Image (cartoon, rainbow over all chains, first blue to last red; front, side, top):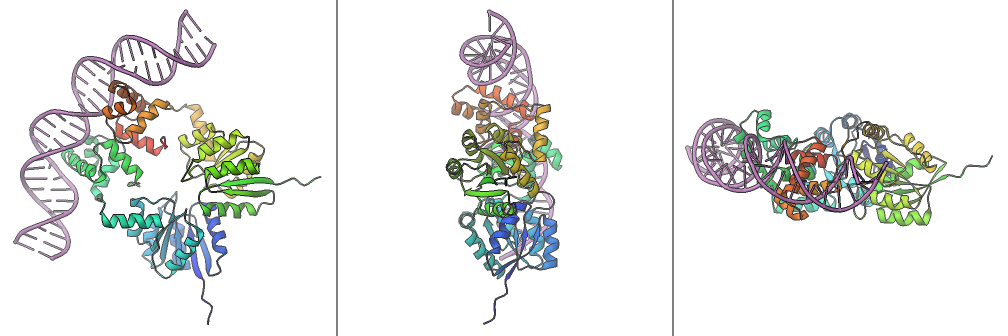
Length: 209
Length: 209
DNA sequence: CCGCGCATCAGCCGATCGGCTGATGGGGCC
DNA sequence: GGCCCCATCAGCCGATCGGCTGATGCGCGG
């Protein structure tokens, strides 16, 4: 039988320490080969087209420049499998990553063996989710958590600046009445009944960029 | 001349990837020896007394159990130098870490050389701060940013639950008038004038645990 | 073509909030 | 003992908020 060619990996994380860690961990796996490293989203996009790896390990928080979701979107569009490897598992992050075309979603707290397995799966286009992530996805399927519309997110963003209804209205070129209508629906969806509560949930759930 | 004994290091981070990365990076430095790894604050405290390392590299976010600040406090009390190595550089995090007795404060985005240098400094009890952290500390010295009192933090915590004045009053066994007084001062100190704004700043600055 | 989701707006009203002025008492510091 | 910070409370009042009912228009999919 012929030797299976190794899975070719591109790393993308803004922290040198994390890249070094992945490099070290993956170095022990003979069938996984790291072919490149990127410290920013832009770099990842460039290297992805240049190196055409089988899988990209992508962090969602990338400091400067485009974020991991945007990088995922652009790279996934080229047909390369993106395996998200991040710290947080909020609904908003998961949803955005999946919507952007991620093949899998792993947490950095995951055991190395799970990481290896997920990489091999991702190389073949199969989806792998960390247990906590899978749980959230399932829960979301059962009880379709209210999703905020784009406009509602606009309102929420202004609200999170501490603005009053009048200022929000002016900022978005709509009437105060409309602002209040949106706010009411936002309260409903987030399960709160004050603007302070809405901001708290928004920040907690990382609903805003 | 006699060979200098290596600096003995204990790692504390809840992410295997990060520990592996530090292990790999520090492995290239002959005068630095990693003598142990901890995946939680409790483990770090235990290993610190058992191994008595020269320096502990401590993350502030540790998932389960006690957080990095508390671990730092307990370990620093035993005389071991704690070098905080974390992702964020908000005033609140920095202040809490320093107050807990940290010898230095580095960001994970820092270049490896800076990390090595900081470790060697910390081993001798010298303080090292990442440039962004140093800037914040200096800024704070020049213009002593208003610090919230414990009571004000209590109020802020309730506020961040989205509670109204009456509920906050009941929760803290004080009158609504007192709540309003505290809120007014909180607004002043945070530079906002609405509860939504206060919550936003609180979350942004990580003022609450 | 009709229904549905979404965004837009209006008016009403009681509840809440935020700013103000002012006061009391405890605790630490010089 | 005096000073200052902190926490506590009171009352007043205009501005704002949140809930309600109801309405219009647009685009999309069956």
